[in-house]
Image (cartoon, rainbow, N blue to C red; front, side, top):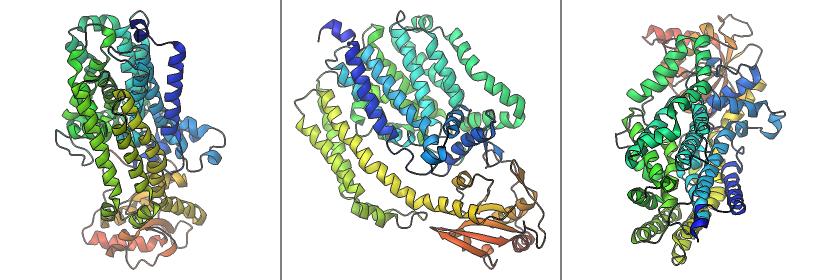
Length: 600
């Protein structure tokens, strides 16, 4: 390929590659997106808040189950709410999951297109097949185990990943080509990222640019081309108005919850028992790149080879991007797998750019990749040995159903095909071998992984939807609804009404009895119990493990239905209150009014 062709591919060729990447993105992210219900517990909280905005017209404060939800900024709720506001959503989205997951799915596709377009417009040196590289990088991103999960999960992590990634790609494009790229779009997108998940987007962007400038000894040039001061002003003008309005309306509770708990406390202390060792993200980095982890490590080892030309610095930029995520979240006290998601586009660039030319390192990485695929294939072929070890009390028939479905063996077949192609195409260029191994993994996702998720949905989430349906059918006027034991926010989502949630302990019974009288939230006001009144009973969804506890025995409930591990009870409130009084006499206390940073 001539130097001129290497610098810029033709517009027609670029459009064809982008169309191919878009088609792959549609298959990976959108195929059967709404075929399963929402998975407890976090996605239903996001979905319920987005739907509530569409139903109430209150687009300022996210609310779930009658309470404000301060944990995330509103952008993901706004996008979900737009989906729920479309006419006839109950017909084309009966499970309510398509509208909730669409922002995550579109985010995945946006990153794929952003990676492809950047590589097509600025082919990197020594790349004889830049159009193939522009396909391999998006596939490396989309096929990451983390991305396969979170691109179909109704939370804000995928949206943050997309907006931060697009902002960083625009920053690099401005640095590489100041005459062809304006400096402002990157800061606009960064402002949207702050509206997606908060100030962490600015921190990650700043760390990446600082590391990149130091690595290249070009902080001054970076500052001149990116114009961070007016850029951050644009970011603030886009993101801060909502924060100011929310603080004005909600006051101290919003400040304490969003900034105090969900940002500062998550970084400085462990919340929700998410305690992990300091090195947690190192193995997660390797797992998230499977089965192409060897190419990721090779890409990191190559970053010193980049020349002085800014247009040939994309591999260095990707390495700084990945390291910025690694350093920031390694220092955080609370660690979650989803925190690594913003690094996956950088890892994808490193994977694709590591194989631009044949070398002993590329040959070794290729061999290791084939071995990893073979080992994963072998693990799937031997699924009959380890699947019976799975124990999930919420899915007691999972082992038999999964073995009978043959889906795991189908997964083994696709991984075997990928490994075989890696061996048969030894004489082809390394990037073509990578793509040849990626395509069977796309089919694995479509024909095995998604059907396995649908099977799990039928076993785990379908009973909750059935309980919700029966609750709505059996509910009397003004009768309270509750769920004790295993707490599923999706029950609130599918009943579209306030559910009083309590756990398994004897204190949960005491709390429920008192809340039926005193709890107040939007859409629900507790009432004292009176014999013969219409509100003298409560509908309770209770799992069998909780119902077997001694303090739930001998209450003479009316069992209205059995759904999986759940039963639906109609329980007399006077009996419940009497049992609560007995427990309190024995020293059990109620604590439902104690401050809780995360409550629904």
